[in-house]
Image: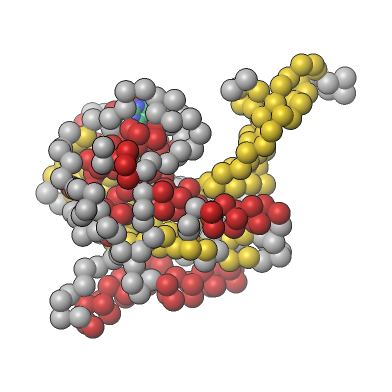
Length: 325
Ligand SMILES: Nc1ncnc2c1ncn2[C@@H]1O[C@H](COP(=O)(O)OP(=O)(O)OP(=O)(O)O)[C@@H](O)[C@H]1O
Ligand SMILES: [Mg+2]
């Protein structure tokens, strides 16, 4: 794995704009002591409830936990889950640019858990209406001017429909910044955590960060490492990306860029909970790029952060003290 060349002093990002599918992760913890007389199902006697920011909001939470400044654009309803999300975001120090509409339903995932076993997950979902997508564009246009990076966190719930508009806006912002300043302000990096099997909408992004199954859905099953590399090259050219960062769970990650490729081995001694590791990866990548570091410098740091969060229970975050220890 590449050495970490980013110091804590040089990890000082410009603000980061996160746009995507915001959700509330709700956990109902309890005990199962009997089977229901109504149907052959266990009865969960609820002991306590926990709520955490999920989806794009978890990326935002990772950024502020690491000391970055983060603005979050997403869609909420006007329900009690929306109130929970806003209050959690405020406590996490996230600048709240989330849009609300009373005809919208906030996305909530309820996980029912007994003795660390998930019994059931229940989802409330709704796709954002068209007018919310228009408001999203205005929100992004108005808050992008001083950002060092934009993260598009796609969980396939609709907030990133017409995502090409956002990529164009980010590119315009960079062109304008260049015009204004003779010092040629660096372009805002555009990072995408993708979903689905058609990535043409992400054309022109800086870097896209799929996991193995997400990449497989697009380029098919690869026979070996060389085959993987040649398929990724085609994709990078087609989508006009600077790079693709493949996260490979216990195998670490591989960066494919114009210079070639860079592999880093997973950096975790103990693994407790891998959920949310992808959110940590894209958060740290965005922060490193928005601090003026290169993709190749950013990758080992993102890998280290992911190794730290998988060793914690629950969708966890990493602190600067841990990252630079
Ligand atoms: N089992 C593991 N052992 C060690 N490191 C891991 C493990 N799982 C994940 N990681 C670290 O986390 C990074 C991201 O994980 P992964 O590739 O599973 O992303 P992901 O599927 O997007 O995760 P999620 O969607 O749950 O947030 C990996 O590149 C690696 O650094
Ligand atoms: Mg992921």
